[in-house]
Length: 326
Image (cartoon, rainbow, N blue to C red):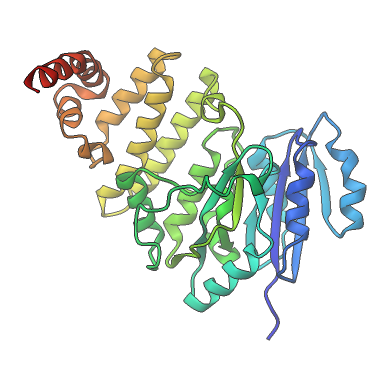
């Protein structure tokens, strides 16, 4: 029986500094057969100058007008012939055995989607082995549906990044293309659709990917009203999708996303943070915040926006009372 083809799709924009490392990690995969597709999203640096060298090594390279990372991934999907898809951002890195180990495990478990732990790094992946993303949120030895995993996102307050996934093409055909609108949460919105249709999700619980952590990464993604609003709209899309399910507890996932936006914007963009807080209050679902007993009481009593203000104001008083009791 022939082994299935795996397509590795690498969108790149002004990533001349990093993309060679990403492409090399794809070329160096132990597993065969693979096809590597690099899509240059209208770069203005020297990225396209690297293409002849990539093409000599069998990489398929395409240049398109700038439309955003999701637009570039869609162009990659249009070219992809693989039965499985690996999305690889231009600044991330795959362990040489990632495709082989993940795919073999997926086939053994009859899974349509799988993920692995990853390690954050800044300069060189080999220097970051002690910075593995914490994976203690749930029992990763079990096979789950995608919806069960999204419920865990909401209630256990964690996530899985793009590079960690390996996706069966049949599942991608159900989820559809990436939303081409430029959005900091493009991966979150897309993989919500993938998870929505996933019936058997498994974890190969060994580090097989490296995620480049750029300075002020989270804040830089929300450094304009346009980006914040685009993310806000993506949360609404995720909520609308999950509203079609009978289990309303799944709404804890978009509720978590809205809370994180509130936290990241309340100092620099108070009006937009207030909008996020109001949206949070309208989602009638449980939250990981319920573990913070007193804070959760204030949120339920006064709403997220004012409840947080009152809780924060009273914290020094409570500390003083507790200190005096000692």
